Image (cartoon, rainbow, N blue to C red):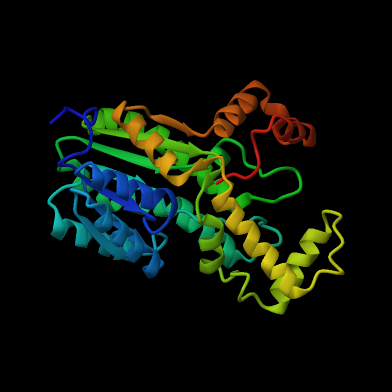
Length: 323
């Protein structure tokens, strides 16, 4: 067995949050295929069951433990940790992957939605790191991998869209992970940390976020649809001829397009992440759009939130959605 993970993950133990869909699911599948035992949690039971079934169908060498847990609730996180501790005596890898989108505006969105988004995307990372630290410390070698986003260095989706809760949380995740590098080096040298900053990856984050926040297009109330109309209207689009049913269909199609038409699939993203962990890299950009955006923001930070910056970004063909 290698000193760290350069030879793979066979015989190791990993925890993956948000393992029901997207990058989380693919991390579970690829880790178990390599012989790693993986404990994974999610809030949507049917998604988690499908992940376990896919691993079984894959004929993977590693074992899978599944648990329902909301990472924004510390008591549920601790309960998940206790289940893992009863299953395996230590943990080598913690992938804080779970995330949702929402709470775009601190002015217009409800505090409940804002806090829920921030709670999942930031406190989920913090709570799980705190909870699993004793099991990581028991390992011979350990690694914490925190999923931030390009919105962890660029707090925007463009000049016409508010994006505060998600961006604020992802900045916190990035800063926390960078601080862990020195903290671990001084306090627990066998532990390392990496921050993942994906661009547009083909995940179900839009679909799942709608379900969690009560904004599933199929179930949205008339008041919620009216709010959507009003926000779209502010961008200069006439919605008067669009029926409620057409609006629901369009929103669902947009969420599915985010998943299905992305430049990088969840499986490809998981491979990039795992290969970077093998190389012991602490900063992991995923996707050409993430690399291009990082380059532009570093080159001209004062212009990063101007309409001209966004226009040039889109003209370069490297930015559509982020996640």
